[in-house]
Length: 175
Image (cartoon, rainbow, N blue to C red; front, side, top):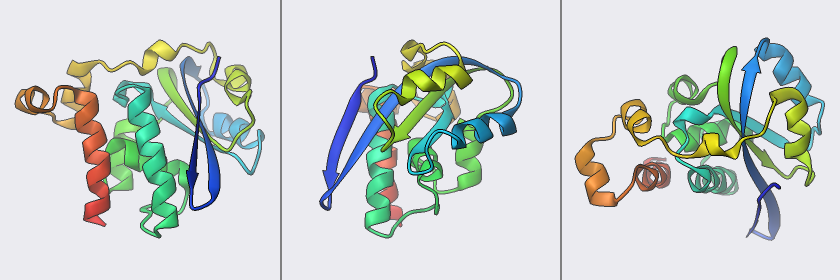
């Protein structure tokens, strides 16, 4: 069952859903085409789940992405790409895509849906394959290497997830 997060920001409700999938992507362009057929009013962003430190990390970044548009401090003009940028904690779109981008082949995929129908994650199984939220769980060693996190940072904050959420929050200061 899909977990839904609903936030109210500036009198607008946003429905956020996050799920993980084990996928074999044969044709990235076809996958993007298939995703665009779901609902043009809905935002679906796919990211490499190996760069995700759990659902809280993604939800935190998604909320920041949504709020960045209302503050007119967005880095990208596309909400999906803004989610990727905020999740990566990077200001550079190219760096965010390098860290969290989807590629052809076997992948663990994190799907984020904003303002989509309630059963969107089940529908995504048709194009992404089997849903397995466990792929969203933080693999601390991989994340430390990907994001250049030092052991002393983890000892100070308590977890890689907290560090990544802090980096997302710090993007506000840098704008």
